[in-house]
Image (cartoon, rainbow over all chains, first blue to last red; front, side):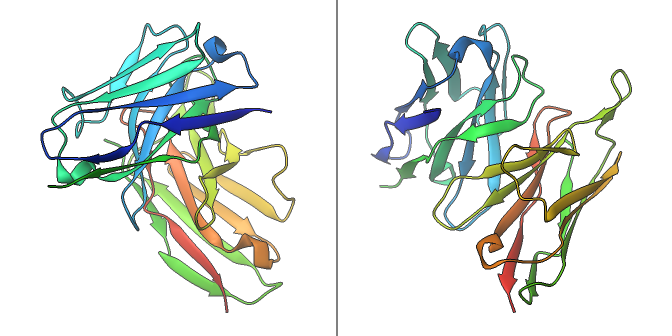
Length: 121
Length: 113
């Protein structure tokens, strides 16, 4: 079965760090770019970051640039999001998403259920 | 950044009736090199992750019901549900993947009247 399973969310204090993981199965992971998309409680979707299939290209939203790092381990079929210097406004459900292409200019055709990150003191 | 604006923010439609959602981008998402519109439509039901309905503006994702249709090119796009069913209650989003950052519309909530 083709699926994505996020983990690593939780409660963290402002200024703290957290690393999200996304385990992929059911497809050739390295063939596809991957993204993180977040959704604040009761709000819409916000694109966060993207990484190409071979990790040669990464891009970030301005709101997280310099604080978040996307990476992947194709040998482990796993996507990561390292989040540092967390702020209250980073509170959201973080979805990993598989893109329909190897390159980053592509749609998300498979989404994980998401992992809730709460930044609060 | 390319701003995606959906209208309306919400709509209530009777079962079996038509629902129409508009999506407008602040600049074209039609790539001249391949004549493709870098636009997708997603459906998100309560408590679930989004699910893709269409990509490249008009390519139907496998499994998306035929009552969903799309139109548009360049900067103006439309998603239509021809005969609303109870299972179509959801929030619908358009997304452009032409530029970075990739951006979503604010969402349109579809309910039953």
